Amino acid sequence: IDDMRASALASLARAIADTDPDRAARLVDQAARIALSLPGGVQALVLADLSRAVASTDPDRAAWLAIDAQGAALSITSEDDAAVILASLADEIAATEPDNAERIARSIPDEDKKIPVLRRLALGLAATDPDNAERIALSITNTTSKAYLFAALVSEIADVDSARAIRFAVHGERTALSLTDGHQKASVLTSISRRIATADPAGAIRLAGEAEEIARSIS
Image (cartoon, rainbow, N blue to C red; front, side, top):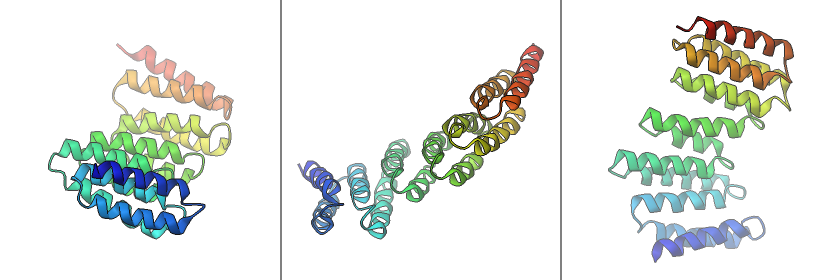
């Protein structure tokens, strides 16, 4: 019952935050007090909801709530369960608090579970904050994941910022060429070629040629 009450208060606070911030703040206070009595995973999700509720009206409080949510998630003894909750937290606040979302994502201990969250965050930032999207993509340690992410970033931005799309394509090409698997290498280059075609037709043709040459060399 407490978890449902806290979630309901959080939803109401989020709904009225822009029109009645004082009342929303009181609702957040009530929900936060209830959340403290909840199990770690549920507590984390409620606190993340509260963080999102006040993100536009009280960013400092939103940041503290996000930190509390992260702490609650990290208190979960099962690493797999903690990773699922942390991923949900990061996704929950990514649109309104990308910096906190990234910090939470990076606290996921398992690299394989961390990478998809960072990928979603980078793609979400591509159009509005391409510098940070690029930085996040470059920080990914798995070369294959990084290469495919840059291919996806090209798609996200090609129609609105051709120069940035070309920059992403260059990163993707360099990363792809460092792959040892010929199939993956050709696949990434083909994907970038297709996605960069409107922004850089000549580059798309060149990449397609590279992909074809690599594909023909696979034995």
